[in-house]
Length: 208
Image (cartoon, helix red, strand yellow):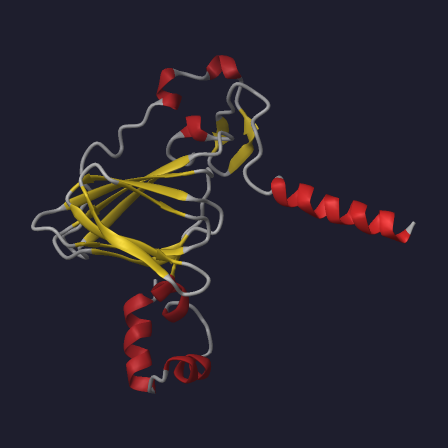
């Protein structure tokens, strides 16, 4: 009897894990009543074509200040995506611009190089780096939760279009998460071998 219970519990764990991604929709679509309440749909008869189209990434973002700009396309700005389990991003790079090491805890990303040359890669849990220079028209996949990065190595601006298998992939930028948060200074000094002056400089740079 105990073995049967153990098997059932193990099967339950696998079933829960398999269902952990965005759930399948049970309606044609669900246009949220508001970005703050994505679980309540407005009447489908009130939906318009504007709910299912988005023009906010027609043009490059302003990357002149930092060398990098990104525009997330999710259900907050594109209501038609709600409950569909997908989202999108446009990333623009100045010459030498970088997308700092980061990861998406809830989604795999597929990145398409629309323009330029991008050194792009990710790091697996064994600290092995998978990276190469991608050119216009090439595609790379970043598995869910893997740390990844991009650097414009071309002679002109570059653009990447990224798609996610979640309407809310999440974003953790490593420099900001580590040095822009309230982690104890003593711990950071010991972990990275930094003195207080060096650490203060980093915290000032990455604090939101």
